[in-house]
Length: 211
Length: 158
Image 1 (cartoon, chains in turn purple, blue):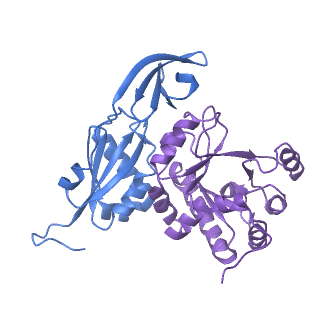
Image 2 (cartoon, rainbow over the protein chains, first blue to last red):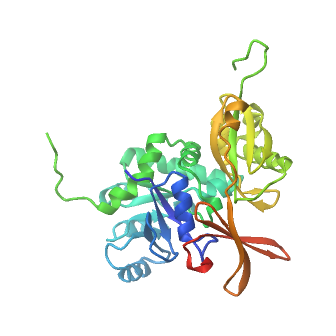
Image 3 (cartoon, one colour):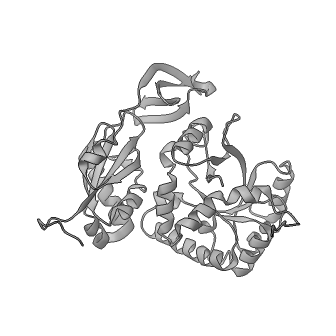
């Protein structure tokens, strides 16, 4: 299974070009990256679209502008009602930014729905690297809660550096160690890094089981 | 904690590489950044167990710690984003029990292939191309320097 960095932000949003970030990701042990922005057709890069909208209506209209099956559609989370509505939308692959949402914005009901609809929850590693003190403590605590739900309801996680520079990209080994801060085991990290591959392939209505 | 017959504690050495290329931070500033990262992430008690010390040269640093604490040290090092006010990343290359073994894993700095001025968006950068298709762009201004990171196939630097 390919290891995928769940989201990067290349130039002009960041200071590093898409090609350079893809090169760096390969050196750091990744097979693919999801790029929100950037230009050019670069091997090992999946196109990502981030939708940040205050209401579900606006998310739906933004989704209509994206051709079906094109890249990874990620929606920035909001409150619980918003998140549950987003999970139910066709075409949404990833719910992101839950560490910034109010507490209780993703509960057991949303977790069950995410599992059923094949929507992954993004764990953004940038606050673990860039924040200090109470801000980082809050993020660790939120990720610990999400991990508990993940272990119980088996929805998918993605891990994203959300790097805007090659200086913010981290190796697979670093990510394994960073995820250990909030209690994630190495197997779970590898599963999260490769989950997008199976999410993009989608679930077949018929599962073939070999005897 | 296991000790050698001489009662000296066992140590581990972590080799890290500085990114971007050509940067050579002061070892004391690297030490300050490592200690700050350890203390901020793990607190004073665990940081005193890690007991880091730093040797830095030629684009690399060797960080010494107590045996058994190297994973915690590497986790803390991965949270370093600045050294002495400069944006920097520290990439862990390997961990070893002896300095001799770790020195053999150090590799020479990337070769500088060419250097020329490049204009992007009305700004003039000094472009430095290194082996491995990497091109670093440096703009020196009044408020310090700004860097962009491109690849040699990018249209902006061709």
